[in-house]
Image (cartoon, rainbow, N blue to C red; front, side):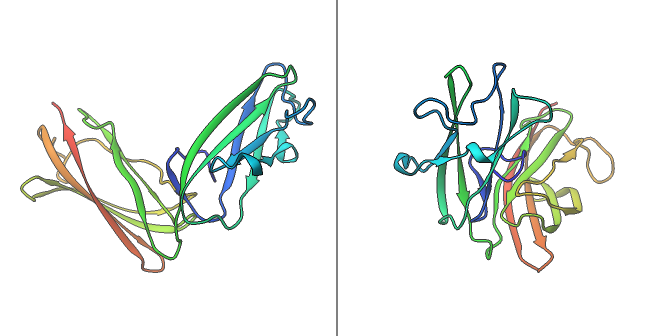
Length: 210
């Protein structure tokens, strides 16, 4: 949904764009030859209102084997949704893929799926999160604490967000003075501010193994 960084269960606005990248060695059926052989998507298991996507398929340059489908939804209800996409090749074989997503209210700044990966880690990890303010300017503050509350590392970043998922913020396991932090459990806080002054924050845990 919206960009290639999306993962199932992620958040979107009320008018997300479905992106489907397809490949088949024998070629993609884009004209619906054969009964029920259209490229389709079904929203929230409503099979009676499936959407035909044939006209939204665009083949890669000089290729009949692969291409991209791009379809924009309009005014989806807030809350959880599911999608299923079905594609046929020219030999009447089909394949299906599905995903889940959450439509949020853009008037309220929301953080979702705040995590670091890998976790636990030994030498390095990366911080990720999703938000509902696509293409926004964001001030990001990540603070890492011991379980007793001592601040050991701070990241202060300004990013130009594309889509609803941030690029990873990497950490090498060193504190603010360049010393390696000992093994154990730590707490981190992700605080984010938009250009309009909206704020949101989340707390999570990480584990260092040495």
